[in-house]
Structure formats: structure tokens, C-alpha cells
Image 1 (cartoon, rainbow, N blue to C red):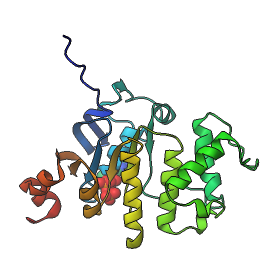
Image 2 (image 1 turned 60 degrees about the horizontal axis):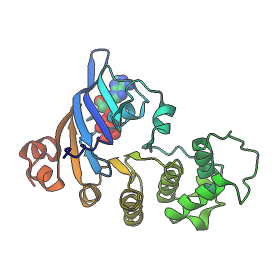
Image 3 (image 1 turned 60 degrees about the vertical axis):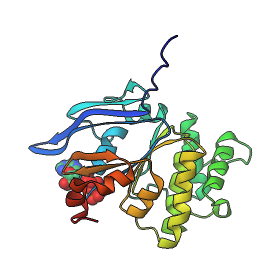
Length: 256
Ligand SMILES: Nc1ncnc2c1ncn2[C@@H]1O[C@H](COP(=O)(O)OP(=O)(O)OP(=O)(O)O)[C@@H](O)[C@H]1O
């Protein structure tokens, strides 16, 4: 009998590095994320977390190492090809069009994924496919009541939810969330956490999430990656990471 085929990791980076001038921003980072896994990325300010996401999503090119998505190397692929291959990301700061409505913002993402043109002047018809997808993902994030609200008029937490609806409208397999709770009022944290959990459990997305809210990270993820000075210090279960003395001294500053 043949041995079962080993599942390819959804995302793998090997010896990834970025040097700018004399500065080593990221050095020799290697890990693999299994399909359907959720990984939290933590580390002090300047540890290299966003740089790692910028390299994976194609905003920056590495000076060393490789990146693959579902077994296919994407190290030199342009951003749009990575998106087409199923990679999606959110950013630390909002990238919504503030004067467009919630529906228009999300619809544009659905339309872009479908290969349609960006026609901002055409009022979305209730029946077209992009509108149907947009309404669905807006409903998933609980904002159906705000369809016609301008994105700029939303609260911080609602903007974060619309950004997730935008991401989901592109139907990504692997998502990178860069501080999804940043600036969000504490009252909005549980509903945002539930949306991220559902993205993972119900949609089956593979998720990597940079987040400073430790309680959120530890409650959601399968494994935690700890970055420090541009290196990967640890990648393990939340319990093992919290108990790791190297992590405690590097990240938490003192034993917990
Ligand atoms: N283009 C660049 N040129 C020079 N230095 C850079 C560049 N991009 C990032 N850095 C530096 O690399 C380091 C890592 O930055 P990065 O934003 O990845 O950290 P981070 O872990 O995401 O931090 P934070 O938690 O504050 O968002 C920082 O010291 C930053 O100043």
C-alpha cells in the first residue's frame, strides 16, 4: 500500500531575510503553516512582524530565502499574482475609501477578484454577482445595517470589520491580518474575535495574525510565532510559548 501523501503546507518560508543597506531587518526566518491552521505572531515593536507580512504579501522583496504558497514558490511573484493564488491581507492602517459606502468598498474588492473593471460611477445593481458576494461578506461581519453608510463615518471597530469583509470578498485561502484589533474599542474586541474565529473555522482559511492583545491571540490561535530583533525566536503552542524562558525574558521582560 502506498504511504499517504504528506499535505503541503499552506504557507512556507525558508531562510527568509531582508537587508536594507547595512541593516538586517529580518534574518533567516523559516517556518511552515499547515492548511487551516491559525498562527499568532507576537513580538516587541520593531521585531519585524510587519516586515514579515510585507515579504509574504509581496510589498517587499526578500534579499535572501524563499516563500511558497501551497507548494508553489511565490518569492518573486507580484502582489496581484499572490492574491490570485489565494493570499489576502489586511493592513495596520485602514485602506478603505472613506467616501464610498460599505457596500461600494466591499463590492470593489469582489469585482477586482472577478476580473471586472473598477467602474466607480456605475451604481451597483442589486442583482449582479459582485454585489451578491459583497452583501454576503458584509452580513458575515454583522454590518448589513450599515450597507449605505460611508466608510469614513464608521467607528474604528466597524472599519476593521469592513476591512475583513473586503478581504473575504476576494475568497482568500491564506490570510495575513496585521493588528486587526489596533485602535478598536474594547467593546468591539469580542465581536471581531468571533469574526476571525469564524473565518478560520467556518471558511477554513489559514490565518496568520499579528496582534498585541495577548489574551486575544492566546485564545484564538493554534500556535504562536515569537519574533525578536528580526528573527523567529519560537513557534509553538500558546502554553509552550508562554512557558518558554527565552520568550519570557525577550518579549515579556519577566517570568509570568
Ligand atoms: N524600509 C525600511 N528601511 C529601514 N528600516 C526599516 C524598513 N522597514 C522596517 N524597518 C525597520 O525594521 C524593523 C522592523 O520593523 P517592523 O515594522 O517589521 O516591526 P514590527 O514588529 O511590525 O513592529 P510594530 O509592532 O511596531 O508594528 C524596525 O526597526 C523598522 O524601523
